[in-house]
Length: 629
Image (cartoon, one colour):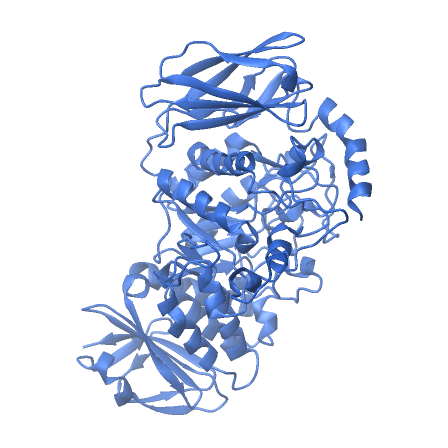
């Protein structure tokens, strides 16, 4: 679709959107704690409220309302708070107010006055920060993340299946593109399941509003970053969800999108200024080629197309080089942490954002919440390209030096797939992916995985071979980094991502009327798979050597890959035979790690390994062996 046609459509929708928006009205503004009264003529202010005592004292308020830009704005005297200036936008429906919240400011109500065609007042709330020590715990290698799609996981509150005023106000579980009804309550109802599995953290795909007319269930076309999608719950319910998770010993990772919004975002339908988005004479898609960013011979045009082109036709690219846009985004994600107490951010399409913005965003988040875990999606083709987007030892390139602590480790995921999807698969790629850890400041901050919502399910990729499945889980839960499992992998959910809806099916038992309920009973091989994951994950939880121990790997030989996780006192050997024949392995090769130990126990089966000098490993088998003196 051309941009001119798209804007005509947006203009047609704008009148209705502004007159009766789904996210607010002229008398109230949604907040995490309920509602705040707003002055007539002011539709909303972002952020809806703020806190005293933030490390960065600066606050930018984006005021939205019909004709508000023709007003002047003043701040009634308030100790510790100063009005730094007011900025008009191209659109008459916006006004920017810049404040400084000094260290001596107290919680209370700021009185903002607007004078234009009419006089308006607005009580803007400053809150006290929450000092609960369980908030914002961060994640470590000791954690095990369970990733899920909320709409497809479990329906805990049928009352929010259909929400009046949303563009998709029905559910249809027989359609892979429709909403199915899963929600926050459904996730919370199954905390015990996560704990039984051995997971310690939950990562739902984005829960914020995606009020798009089609396929909005995935969450990556945000239409309001300050509001939980009402079909999942409310802001207050999400904050309570995080609190309940913490009380139950679980952490929460929030999935976020920096690079783009959905085309029905209110700031796209009614744009503050033309330069809030990257715009072209005709629709221009990203070239999806991150190599242009650090190619010493690359062209500026290729870099521009990568960063500025749209991710998809309904996902306008946000112009993060605009300081107002950058501040808007930074404040949005600071607001989310402070108002909920989440433990980490997973950043979608991380490399697509503008490099200078990424550095500023990462610094702002880390300065305010140094304990918050950050890891990004960097779906790249080589170890060096992947490491470029994490904290690394590489030089600045085109002014960019990543401050992101870790990334989703696609290189390890690809290598595990290559090793297992064919007979006698290539183990060298896995060895090389880990050998490249020297590129990172700390590769242990990477997140390991086998598949996700965009990839074919791993059990299908490996030909539904159960022995290979166990090998993949053994590697996932014993290599360095924080492991992450995509929902349903533990019960052998399968399919290929053609189209992607096939790998986003409902979890059996999460919805009324399901004939199978894997939350309660897992017969046959699904039960064996769950038990294998659970036993190894819970062993990992109880034995820090698998999370904080060092890693030593040996070059694969004759289809066998061996590595060790070890501390000064403990040692676990992981040995995998990736061939169809039993392998006799000379264990003396591993003497630098096995000296001082005489035998071992395979931690899942309980089988004794009596002799570490001669090992007979069955075909397509991985052992996780606790060494004994």
